[in-house]
Length: 92
Image (cartoon, rainbow, N blue to C red; front, side, top):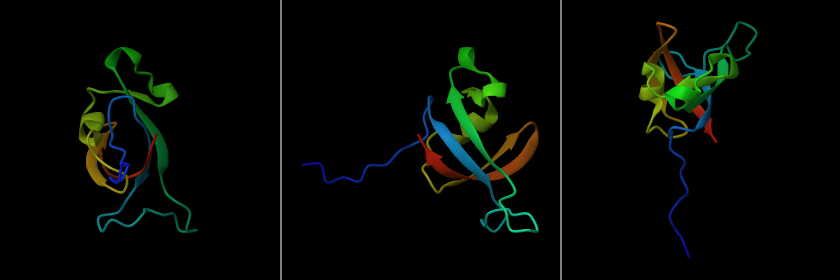
């Protein structure tokens, strides 16, 4: 029997839901309380990248920063040349 916890880690081929977070780690929200930014990000081999379909190249700085992280981790990176802090909400 396997007693080890099952943990998903961000790898090439992972589909992620990312949420923008503030400096203090809280979820960034609009004035009405809704989440300011949450988006899908799929890391794929360079030859399969297609930003329109949310499929991003493994060689991008953002993808490189996300690799190896777990659900709940906060990652500082750049997306479209803008610095951003995101929390990994889910991995599939």
